[in-house]
Image: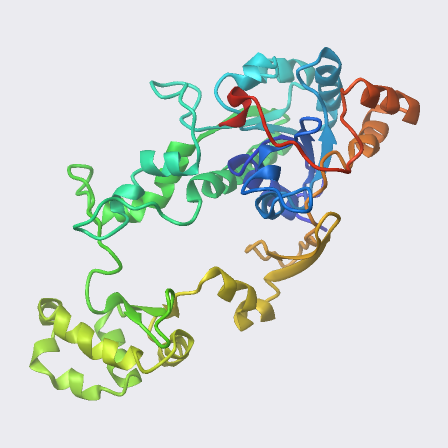
Length: 416
């Protein structure tokens, strides 16, 4: 049985922070009904350009295992349909920009009047109060506000934008944990609650180690360290010397140093006075780096990883994103999934990393816009085909899921 079987989620999220949360809950077995605007839907559907199908790869990656229902929440009829659904769901979650949910009159107090034990979850860039609470936010804005850019890059260079969207997806996974905790608490007490996450604060969770290794209890800024702090914690070029042909080595202890020397067939380095202890290895970093690099340059990054890893040296090839989809390790573990999407055909998606021995959920493709509108309104509210057809004619529940999307949104509803 799926771990969260029985949890029902009304999902008013968009882009990534909120959708990462609801996808995590869905992958753990919760039933997630995604509420979207008719005709346009989640703006993530059109992000990164439109193709010859309706949905972007970005949207498909963050909306697996959900059902899509279109409701025009800016109309009295559409809003009332949503309110009619509320009593049938355990969780209500949104990540609109500041003031949007209040403008729709769908705030916590309103929803709680209808379902007193609701778990109402909201993700905001800077939270619901404080000097920055009215500021809009996206992933890299949150990362900048949490200090991530300040510690990324070479020591003598400018701050650099990190690649992963941790500000978004990291916030989403933290919210999924918080929602699950609130759900467990409700099972014990019968009481719901309001759950809030600030993206700025959530992102600082991923900064703790960097802060602890460089800020001296918050009395100075942690420095940028580039790709490494020593010859034994660094990145090295490999054949055929392309953009990502590197191996990262992290020999943290004396024992790992000894293992590294034997793995690269240079046991003589152990007797070299320049490298006889940690202090000297740091002082002679350039010379030691040259010795290690001479070896890595004779191997591909995957060869270097296999040799070092098998010997006991923590290391990894610098995987590019194509490597991930073709990696024999990830393939053997079933982490790369092939799913059928109505608008695209067969697509490959990376999976959910948590493996529960007594819970399993098959990954399903993200839904087309409004694919489940009729199904949900019939099953949950008892509406018949003629009633739904009438709502479609008025534009309250949107069209049938076919044809191109129009991704433009009003600015105030576009951002978090």
